[in-house]
Length: 225
Image (tube, rainbow, N blue to C red; front, side, top):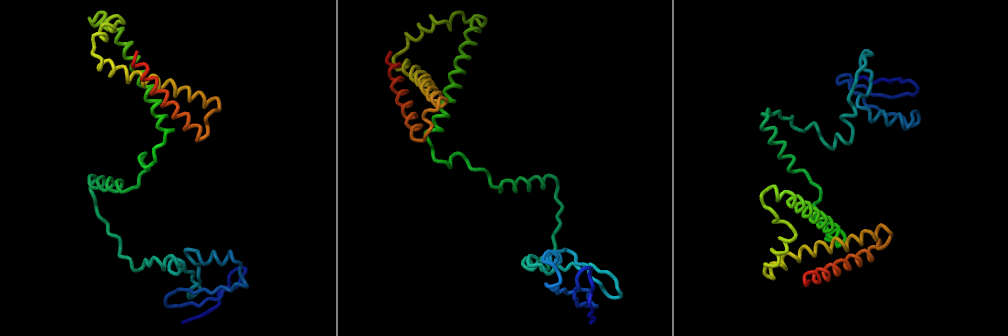
């Protein structure tokens, strides 16, 4: 066992040198070094030490003495096992890991609100009426060229509807009237938002229920015509 003093530039550092293991146990003096230097010494992965015969040695002191390494206790961990996988097995394992990942919350976890239900319905009714209008216009233009003649003309449609029973007329008129009136009244609600009205939560809900009531009354009125 040999002990000696190591001299570092700017400050003294007592060290006890174990000649057999070449491990240096440092006990820095707080009155001779700054806190920054001490922290750098403690957390340094490789501590530069002077060994026997003046040879410089690098002792991984922080890897063995840090609180994290002692808590993990790496020295008692078994060595990693290397397993060769085929491309198919690797892809299967990757997919299994992906299935275990957390995903974003689904829309069903939220409490239903009138505001976003009415917004979704406004878009659905708008797309539905647009699709129906374009479909009828294209069919009306293509009917004469397809040998259907005046089947889709206004006169033919009036004759077809007049021959339908009342329940069939009601089944066609009710969804058309509800779609049109809801989109109309809810469009007025959106315009009122653009003008700065009904932006508070209470007034927004009041406007939403008003749209539903006006839609129901208008649908019944149009179906009775």
